[in-house]
Length: 373
Ligand code: TTP
Ligand code: MN
Ligand code: MN
Ligand code: MN
Image (cartoon, rainbow, N blue to C red; front, side, top):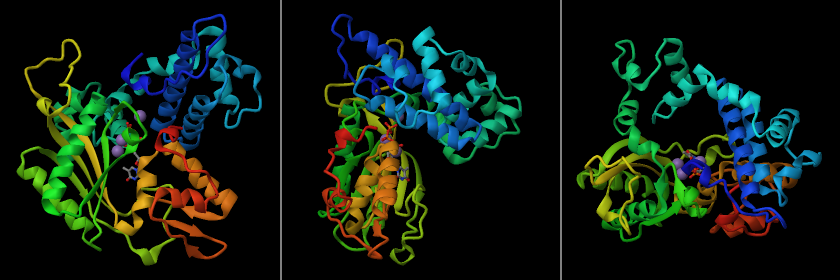
């Protein structure tokens, strides 16, 4: 089982006669197969089919009975014909012909490789593939390829960024950012969000929310924070997106898109000695360095928007999608990272804490650990 697969494992079913390991491995196998299908559709920009497989993987993670019996469960939501066919093939034959064909496909392999570089999306990857590039070195050496600064940083730190970030590393970064933020303002608030707030042990990056009770000062605070990291010599890359948030333009925002708050996508240098318990490098990965590069996201909403942004950035993406859909379909409300709009009352509903938002939606509060859909 790979690191990436690790967070998909939940031991939910124990069989009376067989070792439960059997269930876990089938479960991981189907979820991974769905992820390959989703990725392949993503590379072809078939958003609908991509989402269908992501949603199906989410549903599988939440059903309270052995995945083996799903073949018979025809009423499972979100499992269409195609997802069901892939799953049944795996349950019957232990493998899926279609998934294996994708895994062997040149284009899939190259797009997967190219998009593993920070700053390279499906469109650039497709262009490189069509231009006949095969390896990452090809992209670096081809005179026709012009890398932007994000991609240059992506290549420079590719090995480190491709490696999962551990919880201990995330907490160490939290400590560094917290100290830096307090050094700028005693009122600064910094919270861990994303997968680590949901209790995950590994992530692809570390996400933080930064704010301050001083109205209108949050973006300046974020810029000062980045500056402080630069002066400490640990800022390896920064892509800053200024705020385009305008309370008067709500609710006109697209409810699936990125939010309008100031945010920075960073690559930071983390020293091994700063990590509690030290750093265990996989066998053969000792290159004499005593630090690694880590991807870090920081979003800086105004304090009165704090609860909505915290809810939005805690994820998971699928959980957010489901919650927004529930708000829209069942409650005639529009939810996003900026606020909650009640279409019946024609007003924004206030929230100081995530609990308030769940209450507006008529839902029981869900701890972040229960939002791993
Ligand atoms: P991610 O960091 O992409 O995902 P994750 O932390 O759940 O998992 P991973 O271990 O792979 O990092 O995103 C975290 C949440 O932030 C996700 O629910 C989407 C949300 N988000 C926004 O709402 N707006 C943004 O601009 C970005 C970048 C993320
Ligand atoms: Mn994350
Ligand atoms: Mn992930
Ligand atoms: Mn992130």
